[in-house]
Picture (tube, rainbow, N blue to C red):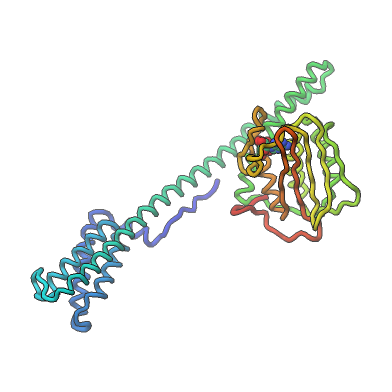
Amino acid sequence: MRTSSSFRLPLLDDLRRAVRVPSRLALAVVVAAACLGAVSALEPALGRPYFFPAFAGIVLVAVLAGGRYGILTTTLFAVGYVYWYLEPRGSFAVSRALELPAVAAYTVTGCLVAAIGGALRRAYATLRGEHALLERTISQREDLLRALTHDVRSPLNAIGMNAALLAKAEDPAVSRRGRTIQASVAAIDVMLQDLVKVVALESGQVVLERTAVELEPVLHRLRERLSEVLPVDRIELRIPGGLPRLHADPRRLERVLVNLISNALKYSEGPVTVEAAPRDGEVVISVRDLGVGIDRDDVPHVFEKYYRARTAHGREGLGLGLYISRLLVEAHGGRIWVESERGKGSTFFAGIPVAGTAPARAASHDPRPAA
Ligand code: ADP
């Protein structure tokens, strides 16, 4: 569970809590009186010192009271000042006409500062509320995903094991049903894994363990491993000999390849070609299919979280596989992209740095860490 690190300005916040509404009213009067007192105290030294005390009072008020209380204090101060300190003293009459606009200007400035202070305070409170809500939502989402992995995957495994037994039955009809159940279980499992993986990636829990990886054996092992649940006979591997080794985390690289290959099989009926070629310090792996393709408008978005193109209609999926692939490839210091045309098929490319040339890089994605 994520610990809440709430967003707050402690000193200002504690002051606000300490000074509640009725006492703020009293505070406004007290501060105004104190500022007038300060004017009295400073008068012998500064002559007619309305500038400094007035502003000291205004700033204090804006910070402490904010909003309407700040305005009230500033106005009280101005009224008191005109009454007690402007000649003739003890009346609201003003002998030197220019003094009145000066006091008015200070008062208006003070009121504005107070009003801005109040608006900032309200915005800050809203922001804090939304931040807290967001943290609660994230934490609930993580709890839900944890429950999903633990509570759903165990019975799912049991179904998978029984389906594997059925798949081995002598009766071809039973065996076929067993394989269908196995494929569905695998699809659900991939979706659950994707959900969990996204949380792990975004919360920076995944650290890459990179070594020098030879691509071809990885692809052969992968095809073997997927053979129970995917129509791997449609996959054609065209990996040239002498390919440089990749600077990659084998498990995470496999994950990217599984995503691209299983998508190609899912969104097409025909052959899927996996190729690789060295290029400028990287090996570019491509996965090509001749399937439904992707609309031009959707192409820039398919690596976004939860994004599903229009052509995905009717096929299972959460729109997370390519997002995860992008985070993983970028964490390797590589890049991933697609060329596609609706109705003609798609080719996904992943450029992975070659061993010995890759810059060290944290497994992170803007702005959150990845794996
Ligand atoms: P999903 O679980 O929906 O397949 P992905 O993140 O793997 O999620 O893919 C995002 C979207 O990109 C898909 O919904 C689909 O619209 C599109 N897409 C991915 N791979 C292919 C492909 N090989 N052919 C056509 N569309 C694809």
